[in-house]
Structures are given as structure tokens and as C-alpha cells.
Image (cartoon, rainbow, N blue to C red; front, top):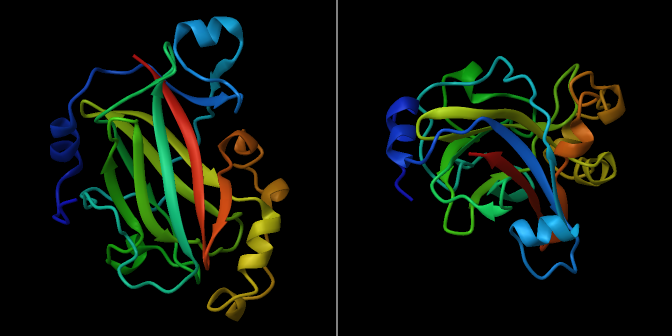
Amino acid sequence: MDDHRVTRRGSLIKLGGAGLAAVLGWKAVEEASGAGPAAVASGAVSCVLSPEQTEGPYYLEGDKVRRNVTEGRPGVPLTLKLTVLDVSTCKPIKGAAVDIWHCDAVGAYAAVTNATFLRGIQRTDGKGAATFKTIYPGWYQGRTVHIHVKVSLGGNVVHTGQLYFADSVTDKVYTRSPYSSRPGRSTRNPDDSIYRNGGSRSTLKLRKVGTGYTGSITMGVQR
């Protein structure tokens, strides 16, 4: 992917695609062999609304189109695999823009420091997937651990949400450096007012890979 600076409007218009009305989450029975209307009708695949959540104060215009957003920031490696589907067919959407941003291991955002770390845009591929290389986020006072996300198509933002982590996994990660330099995480998922408004349906599925993790979630959109 190109690692060049682009304006949000300019980059998203280039991504193309039809306008969308709503963004939804998607889940499938693992045994299901296919997708599309037949699978939905049979009950093998179901599409449900994914909660819209606040953008928060740290969004910036002009994020870079890139896969690796770490910029050398220390932390436990995290690969994000975010998939966008058409909810009417449960089939992947190619060319959607997925924008993420989050704090570093000690709770700092690039928006505060005038930097660009841990934020970027990826276009979805033919399987509807956008992949990011980042680190496990840290925490700051008053919020549980999270990643901000936007999904856009044809220059239109169609979803604003946040992605969450199981507290049990976070507890393990935070025993490691540099997270361990900040003990006493103050807010867990059940205590977070934003998480309580649909966070359980925006929680990443995490898998341990080597010294890091892969986090995945699927979001559907209605054309």
C-alpha cells in the first residue's frame, strides 16, 4: 500500500462504490458452507445491526493510506482483520475504506502530539477485508481499551464505531512491557459507559499468534 498523505475526502472518493444507508455487524455459524440470500433464508447466516458509537475527540483529517500504522511505537503486536459485507446478501464489499485510530501503549494519541502513529486507512480487498499491522492499545482514565473505526464508501462515512477487547486478554497483555509500567487500569468493559451501549457486539475475536495477537471482526453494510 502507498504510504502517502491524503485528505479524507480525496482518498475516500477514489475508493468508489455505492452510497450506503447503515452499517451492521455480521455473524455466521462456522459450519455454514456459503453465504448469500439462500444461506440467510435457511438460517445458516444471520445479519444483525452493529451499534453506532461516538467518534470521540481524537479523529484527524488526512490519515495515511497504509497497512502498517505502528511507526515504531512499542507494544504487543496486533494484526487487525476487519471485513465489510453487504448485509442484503452477506457477500463481501470491495473498495470500502476502513479507517482506524487508537492510543499507544501508555495511553497517548497522535492527535494530541501532532504525530501520525497508530492511525491509517485501508481499502477492502475482493474478500471485503482490510488488514492493519498495529499494537495492542493502552488505556487512559475513564475508558476501557478500544480502537476507533470508521467505514466509508464513495466518499460517504457510513459507520462510526469502536472495537473492544476481552478484559481477560487485556489483563494478560498488560503484564508485559511497556504496559506494565502503568499498573492499576481504572476502567474495565462493564464500567465503560460507551461499551455498555453495544460494546459486546463490537468486541474483537482474538487469537494468539507468536508474541502477539490477531483480532478480527466483520461489519456489514446495506447498499
